Image (cartoon, rainbow, N blue to C red; front, side):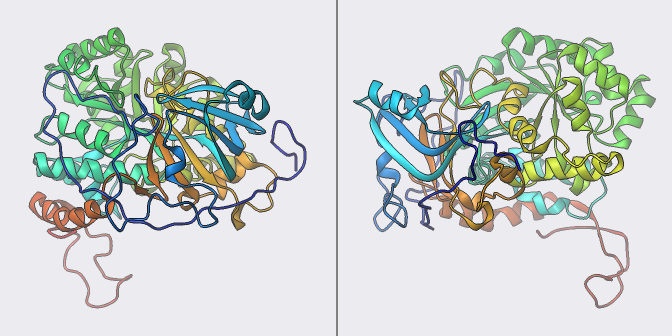
Length: 530
C-alpha cells in the first residue's frame, strides 16, 4: 500500500502517548446575558494577550504532564509557541518534519522543523512526541439546544421536528437553554469539533444565551437567529462584532415557514454581510411533497426560483435531490451539509455526497446534533457512501480517506462561511487544532494515515483540543471550568425538561418483541420520561 506521508515512503512509527482522566476545575457558571453589541473577545492560553487560563481548583490534576512526562497543559502557557509534533495534517496530507508557530490565537508559520527553530529562537518549543497535529473538525449542521433529547429520536419515523424538537425547545427557558447549549458544546469539543454551525433554535430565549454558552465552553460557533417573520436579521448580523468565537448567521428552518419575500430578503441580507443563510431543504419525503402541493416546486428548486439560492446559502441535509437540483447547487455556488448519522437515525435517504464532490458542489459534514464525535462522523460519511452507492457500482474506494477528512475540516469551514478563518493548518488561519495520540494499537503499523484516521481513529485518542490558540480540553475535560459539574447538572435537569415538553413518540416496539414481557396496547403514546 502506498504510504501517504509527503516526505517519507516507509511505514510510520510513533512515540509517547498521553493518558489522563481528570476532573475540571471551575464551576459551571454563567456570565450576565449578552445584550447588544456582542460578547467579549476571548483571551487566555495562547489567545489574544497571551494570558493563561485560571488555575485549576485544588485537587484537580489537569496541569500535570502526560503519563510518561512528555508534556502537559503547563507547557502551552506562552504567548509564542513552536509546536513540533511527529506529523502535521496539512492541506496536502500528513507530513513529517514540520513545526507550527502559534501566536495570539493564529498560526503564524508552518514549515520544516529546522527552519522554524532557527527563525523563532524566542518561541517556547514543545515537542509533541507520538502525536499528530491536525485541524479541528467543523460541524456544518448542529442544533445546540436539542442536546437533552438526542435519545428521543431513536426508533422514530423520519420527520419528527414537530413531535420531538419543537416541543423540546419550546420547553426551554434561559437557564435550561444555556445548559443545553453548553452541554452540546462540551460534547462537540470532546469529539474534536472546534467549530459548529447552529441552525437556529425555536426556544423562546434570546440567542445571546447560546452564544454565551458556546463561548464559555470555548467552541467556535456560527450562530443563527431564526427570522421566519422577517424581523431582527440585520441587528443579529451586526451583534457579535467583538467576539472572536461567535459568527452570526440567519436561519429559516424550512422554506414553508416564511414567505417568498422573507426568504429572498434573508438570503440577500446574508450575502451582503458575508454570512450564511441556513435552511433545511429536501430532507424528507413529506417535506418535499408539502412543498410541491403548496408552491408547486420542490424546496431547493423553490429557493432557486425565488432567488434565495446563492453562494451564501447553506442547505441542510439535501438528501433527496434531483439531477437538476444538483446542477442548481453547482451553478449558484450554494453549499449543503452532508449529515450521514442523521440519515441513519431518522432519514429517508443518504445524500449522494460523492456525486456532489465530483460535481464541485460545496459541502461540509454535519452531525445534526446526533453525536459529537468527529472521527465517527467521517467514518459514517465514508461508510454511508459505500453502502448506498459504492456497492452498487463496485466502487471500493468511495473517495478514500482524504476526501472525507477534507470535507470534515477545511471544506466544512468553507460551507459554513469560515473558509478564511479556520479549517486547516495554514498561516493566517485561527489556531483551531487537535493533538491526536498516534501510539495506539489501532494505528500500528501505519501505512495510509488519512484513511486510518477515517476508519480506525476515535475521540479517546484526542489528547488536547485548542480553539483560537487556547487549550480548551485536556484528555476530554476542560482545564479552566468544571465540565463534570455541568454533566451532573444536565443529568438532573434534562429529564425534567423532556417531561415538561410532553414529547410525542411512536413506540418503536409496541409488541415488546425486543424487550420481552406483555404485548403493548398502542402504536403511539406521549413520553414523559427521558
